[in-house]
Amino acid sequence: MKQVAEKYINGFLALALLVYYLIMSWILHRTGYEHSENLFVAEKLKILFESDENTLLTLGTTFPSLVFLSSLVFTPFGYLFAPILASIAITTALFYTIVCDFKETSKMSPIVYVPVVTLLFVLHPGLIYTAISGRGVAAILLCFYFVFRSLFRYYQTQTTFYLSMASIYLSCLIFCDYNFLWLLLAFFPFIVLVSLEGLKINKDQPPILQYFQSVNNRSQRRKLANRTVAIYIIVFLLPFGALFLFRVLNQTHAGNSTYFLTSQYANWHVIGNVPIGEIVNVGNAKNVGMQSQLLFQVYVLLLNPLLILVFFYYKGKMYELFTLLAPFILMSILVINLQYNFTIEYYLIFLILGLLGLTFYGGKKFNPKITWFLVFSVALLNVFTGIYYFKQTDDAEEKEFYSSIKNYKNWLGTKSINEEFEIAAYISSIADKDNKVLIDDASAFKVIAHMKTLEGTVMPLNKNFVTIIENPIIGIRYLVIAKNNNPLRTFTVLNAYNLKQMLLKEQFTSEIMFETEHWAVYRVAQYDASRQIDALRDERLRQQ
Image 1 (cartoon, one colour):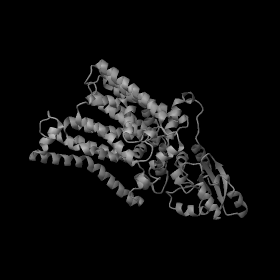
Image 2 (spheres, rainbow, N blue to C red):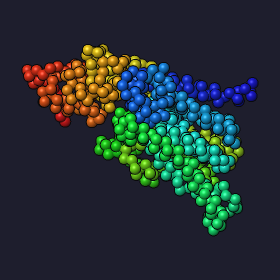
Image 3 (cartoon, rainbow, N blue to C red):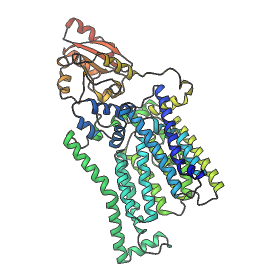
């Protein structure tokens, strides 16, 4: 019985964790919380299966590709729930992979690593958010874990198979978040050091002396150069090649090689990333204040005490230590290159890195009792630093998530309905073949994701969209307008400003039919001078 329990304990825990995440996602949904990235992917899935036009463009250019494709698997459970199920499944797979790796490679007892890993995945708010928010964070963490696990296995075996696998996983990671392309540059400096490991020189000497011997010996110098170039090719060729082909496909089908990066129709990050300046101008900036060189790296390290413990374990292991430092180099590059607020995934990769480090070297310095106390205490501290992160976050949707989870008294209360659901229900009630609705999913993707059907709508993917938007009266009866207080109004031409310009040009006469805080539905009719005066006096069209 004991042997059976030990054999299947990891699978049982993973299944229990899956059920836990499903319950938590149901509770979160009842509070009315829905992340915009979840709705963005859900809307693309809806377009893919219900639209008759441009489905190839939707399938081929929606980015991050792996996040979208993983959600595709779960579409039978509903478009809105598919991204959430995908993130739950991937997070559970990450948990199962980590505990299995502990079992295979770690010197720790299951009494140590099973409670520690379970504690983090059950109580750490960042990992709960990863699983049930429907974002692509889970795919990022899983691919990130596989990349670094392959590198550590290469150090142990000196088998280039693991470098090839690292290259494959790195390509997958880039297709989860394009910013991880800079990880290639972070790896660049110490690949030469890694190349030394395979040379037949005195390994007991310090690396400086090993370099001296390699550079001053013609045979060793040639081997070092060849080995270094080979590793660069193995690690870098596939990611660059995959991106090149993907850009060619974007150029062919969308007319722009960077469409997947710059279009608000293809990439949620175009509209989801919040510029640092915008947060600073509003005031009360917290985490954003830490986004500067050196300070950010120290802040990340303090938020992940488990990684500090791993650095202590890796004392004297130069190659592994340099590998652990690569993500810090990555963040140094991103701090310079990007000018928007870093969200939870850029902090959680360091927690996953800490767990990976423990799987290889945890438990080798202390006896089991000290190891259990030390690792469990640090993991518990990591849970509290995760809570601290959410208290300090400047991301509005992360704040809303933390508020929804914290307010446990309303978990089983009356189900909350957001405004996107309300306006989607109204549009679904009026839209048909004879009363079409013009809507732009660049800004209204949340609304479209909640609609029952796309029948009776005209969107940018339709070939007649440009013609109709220049003269709406010829093809539609209703307009969905982003009001002046809508944060996404600048991403669409269907906003209050442009509606007023069309009214001033006497293209048609409008009448308000339904509105929420950020959206308004107008009915359009042939120009009527007597009614146009009232239409232009609409307070919703007043410019701010």
